[in-house]
Image (tube, rainbow, N blue to C red):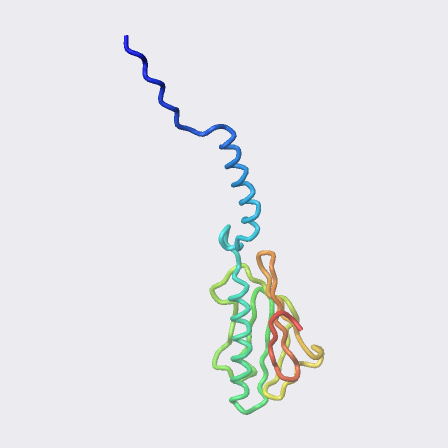
Length: 155
């Protein structure tokens, strides 16, 4: 009889190694998940895009009224979105927003701004704040009464 060859070592992982790997993955998940943007885990409103649209619409209205050379008015109506009305200004069309975005709401007082002389309607004070919200987040845009200047992040 010939001597038996030694058995080949078995390939595999020990229970300790498996528990250690799962523990490391758990720690990484706890650290990484809160840092994942909301849009990757599910549909979330794009507040940055909505804020850009609102600021752009208000700037376009101000520039258009200044070019007209008369004291035109722009009315901003808030709710599920905003409307920059062309009925009392020299805009070529009504600006409505947010465009192509869902889940964004706008709050704040509707206001009228007369360009180019810079005066909010009498009840608004020296500024108006518009707040865009959605997905548990919010952004604020401030409109200054004297100049119509826009400030992101509030007044």
